[in-house]
Length: 266
Length: 266
Image (tube, rainbow over all chains, first blue to last red; front, top):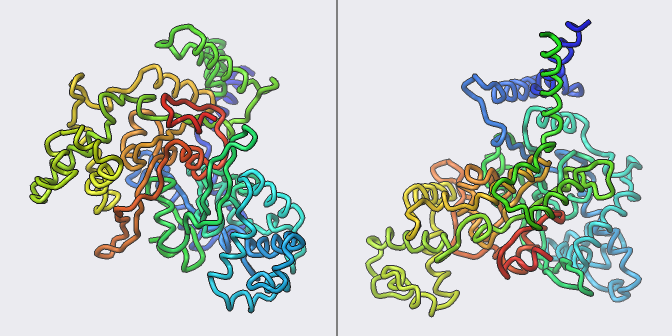
């Protein structure tokens, strides 16, 4: 009886000190192919203290693209849907938008008309829908939108349209002492309100594009106001720059699905 | 014998699960005055799961100014000493500096002459000494300098001139589940090479002023080049902006010693 108790205690201590011991059984949705094998081999090698490839936990940084890597990006970026919906919601206060490019395209869901205006047209919509409020108010707006908006084909909330194998991979890496980051071209403040709940990635581990903000006291209360001015574009050559700015060391593991991720993967 | 072993195991498990249990004995250099009492009371309250002031670990963010708060800032900022030393080291390759402001002031340690040129003069020296190399090369330079440079009065390395009570406070907070950050007007890449070893604060938890960087492939190797252009000034109104950019949530604990910290403390 006492012997069993001792064994049990040893087992508990063992499990507490070796959280990743059985973790390679934790990618159940993955086919047992080359990708999974390479990942498990890598993680096993870098966590083996007496092996030649050991990486100390502080250096185990893993970075992930978001759109198309962790969650859905088709038929159009989720954040673009948000932009179009916001413009429609705000339109009653802006009657002039009905005849004004690019707003009139947004109000009619005319994506071709919108895209013909290029980056400049898109930026106009983004600034109109993303700036002019406090950071807290913007986070609230994002959360309310995600709680109600649905994907046009799947009829489900966008936060349900995340990839199960990638959720398992995030969990597996964290169980092995990795710090998991998002490095996305999407808006940093568009992602932060929900990434902790959905991916287990806290706001301080989310890197993205941003607009400038300004500190103000409003009725004695300190707030940050979002300004209609680009601060940083976290795409292509911007991704390694953003990683250096936020993390300050080179990740050892990187995931992405597009040419916007090339420089980060390099 | 077996009973003792069981007790020991229980003690081990207990210590592992309650890392902060005895932590209020861990500020030995602090006088038992109001400041220490307020800190211990706050930490005890926010870590008490059944109490009204409980804060979950993910939200326990503590931010610290660096110059004058964690390490010495007299007689002049350590980073300014670094700038002056760098200019002297680089001078043989720049004979024109001998007659050129503000370089000639730096070469003669003429701080009054330098300060008369204001922010503009200082920026010139910073860009000459901080830009034009890769991020890796700059980090190397900082580390070599700190390994040899000594404070003019104390004749000790600057990384030895950190405040013992503050080191204890950092350790005490981390033992209680806090994530500790530096939020400094100093250069982010000037601090990151040494804060982990000296303060236990990893690079990703260091926020500071920065210049721009650019991604390049040099002989097929991806590097980031430091550009002579301001990216972000992390002082005064900049501190809350930097906190939002890097952390994305409001700290619950903030420390600073100057008017540059006012907005962060608000």
